[in-house]
Image (cartoon, rainbow over all chains, first blue to last red; front, side, top):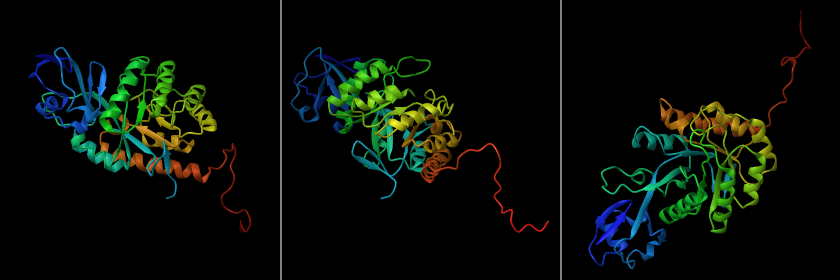
Length: 66
Length: 256
């Protein structure tokens, strides 16, 4: 099924969760924040939050800034 | 512990806050942060790089060593700024944010109406809010009344290096503020930082002045010393300015 991650379409396996997506992307959960359809997913909920077709995710982190 | 800066219940020894943007490379940034003596460093919140080909800031800035202060740079609306702060808190597990709501892309001056409104929402949501504002004493007071943990008036436009354009307004802000006043933006050289501290500011936040210097590491050290010297000069109490001379050597005992 297809979801959108940071504005880019992406195929994921059925049953994928926020946690499994982060593992697939090799992103450490400690360094990111995730929004699913404009709602923040709290870190303890990554494993239990199943993704659905059409979900729009934003995965953000800290970059250099002033 | 001596002369310390307390913001939102956290105490810091350094009064210099520095940004992490615009450095030529990460090793230079790391050395500059070290040389600055800063304990609080600002960061921006952006989409992660999904292909993971680039290094990450957090590979170089240890959040155990530095207090990360996420900003809302490039936010032009109250909603974008509030959303960014919530994401920052989730990413960094800390509630302290540098709130900016930009009003114009050429000046990067704040949209203070949206800023105040965003600040109120964030305070209600439990954030420790450090707002980047203009040098307007009335707005500074409103932000303080809204529950902001500090006020951060600009000295001059972001990245301009023009120095303290309106020291008198900064003084007026200082006279009434009960929260720390941190000059944020516009500092170009070490003397600018010293002037801000001599006015009585509680701290100075800068990025471009260090990152854009020909030798960022050397400039970071200069800024550290300037902030420290300016602070001591403020605490020591300067002499009044006078139009005419007063001799430093005694007039008694002359033999001519």
